[in-house]
Amino acid sequence: MKVYIAGKITGLEKPDFLKKFYDSSKALRDQGHLTMSPATLALNEGFSHADYLHVCFAMIDVCDAVFLQKDWRDSEGARQELDYAKAVKKQIIFEEQESRES
Image (cartoon, rainbow, N blue to C red; front, top):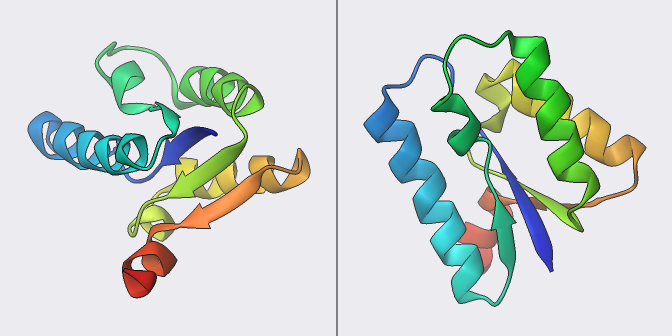
């Protein structure tokens, strides 16, 4: 399955959010999934939040599911990504549920 990873980026230092998204991606890839991450977009500074979301929605469009990291509620962008994913009928996976099942 192709999985988009959503979570908090704004307000975090680059090493912190890069590691957080890398760890989620690795865990999903270890389960056999392909991943897309907005953290790679955040390396390209200077674009507006709306610009980033436009690209993120396109990434969601080509994925089968959206994986929401534990801190997704702390991110306006992740909340918007969840709303969009629901609207286009993507499977939603919550990291909290993954942790409880492990």
